[in-house]
Image (cartoon, rainbow, N blue to C red):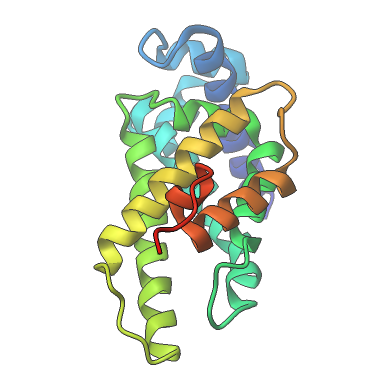
Amino acid sequence: MAEDRRTRRSRRALGAALVELVLERGFTALTVEDITERADVARATFYAHFRDKEDLFARVTADLLAELSERLVPAVAGSAVGFTGKPILEMLRHAREDRDLYRIVLRGEGDGKPLQMFVDACARATAEEFRARAERNAVQPRIDPELLARVWVGEQIAVLRWWVEQETPSLPAEEVVRMLLDLALHGRYWASGFEPPA
């Protein structure tokens, strides 16, 4: 039990050091030694858990995704039809709580691999939910769920990155969600101020 606690503490310290140093110097400039020094953890301890700094970043990203996924379950389960905005609101709240990690992932640090992990995981979960909603409601999607999920997630990630990069967001999370929900329900044409053609 004490070893598990010590292991978790070491991993947390290494993850926190990685995030701090990437924000200060960028991922490419970092060495394992930089990370272990900042975390006050021995190099041998680092290598007992991770192959290299890329492996550490992948683990930190996987942990972020697992936590986000857990938090999204109640938000997604709340509607048979969907498009409530609750999952996006929960994602924005999560991003605000772990802002620095989201910033380095969404910037594409680490040769873009953590960002690709994030996008792929979100798109996979979204496509599954879109297919399940279509089945529950006995409707046939007009656009392939995989493509629809990639478009939806791409928009969300672009907005999420813009939002977390602001020291103080120009719009509250609830307002961002309301606008995205309007966009989802009415489309870009309507959102641009035009009336739908008759």
